[in-house]
Amino acid sequence: MIIDPASQKRAKRFILLTVFIYSAGFGIIMPVLPDLIRELTQLSLSEATQLGAWIGAAYGIFQFIMGPMMGNLGDRFGRRPVFLVSLFGFGVDFLLMGLAPSIIWLFVGRSIAGGFGAIFGPANAAMADMSSAEDRAASFGKVGAAFGLGFIIGPALGGFLGDYGTRLPFFVAAGLAFANGIYGYFVFPETMAKDRRRRFEWRRANPFGALANLGKIKGILPIAFIYFLWVCAINIYPSSFSFFAPAQFGWDSKMVGISLTLVGVSMLLFQSLVIGKVVKRFGERKTAMIGMAFGVTSFAITAFLTNGTIALVLNILNGFSGMAMPAINAMMSRRTPPNQQGELQGLNGSMSALAFLMAQLVYNNLLSMFTSATAPIYFPGAIFLVAASLGLVTLTSLFLLSRRDPETSMP
Image (cartoon, rainbow, N blue to C red; front, side, top):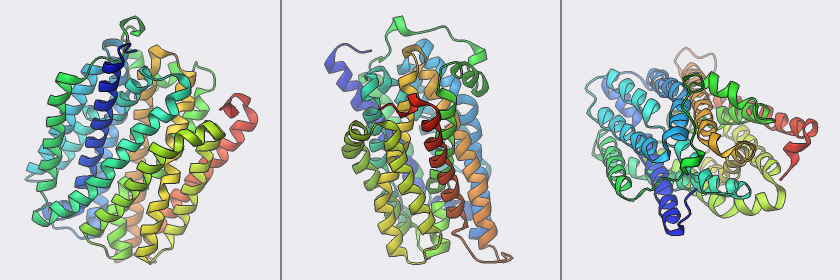
């Protein structure tokens, strides 16, 4: 852990800035990605949705494979080099996508981002280095808040930039990533003490090895399963909303950007101002259950909405659901030794990637099926019913786990 308070403050500021830029960059391209796919392929919206699922799957596959390796490298060499490499991969991803002369370039760019540009594992591991066990939910909440702030600015900026061409948002995102990487090279100190580093082992540097090793820690696996299910449910927004909203509400890229901005505002407020107080009052488990309950309700209502104004209001309320993931992450982090925090966050990154992969394939293909000309019934909201069902299973699992394992009920 960093002892010098000034260095610690500088490190946290850079971590949060990086997550913000990552989120903003991702948000910038979301409103225009369907248009770019259609521009490169001349496909219909329904067909572009299906192809978008496979582009997203490329990201998920490579992040699933590489997440534990990046986490283990962080536990061996420190967070700083892994962080900077991740930033470089993020910038290269968007540069390639912005220059894409054909659809294959989008696949290559997303693959690079999945392999080397995933930032949340290193970010959470570095925050865990600098936080006590009791403060980790609040620290992870700040990371989530930085993501939410990026989601406020990114989609709105992407919707605006999209008026000047489908390529410009990608170049802006790449420029932000490279600029932040240069800044980090000069200001970001190492957050992991040398005496906490451990030997790199190839057998642990893959999703299955990391899962087997972390599975030796009491109580981790059931919570990891709950984490995975919940991420599958909430990935409905990053994987599919840019395709769902035009089909359901007839929105253009600018309106999609505004809607996702409201999601970001809500997430920011709850994860920066609310989650710390809620965890202190109710504990991590109950905080996660409160967030899940709101998420399930929101998904179920959205499935049948035809009024875009009500959808915007629901997006504002989505901040409640944003409290669940930091709380679950903190439950796992509190049980994990300091020299395995990177491995844990790498595994979480892999689980998130696998969940994103499944979300892309399930949600987008289902959306394509229910919006195609041959659909038995036109029902874009089917994907939100699936998300609500997954969320309900997750909430029930956490409730049953707390009854079986008293430690899970601890604050």
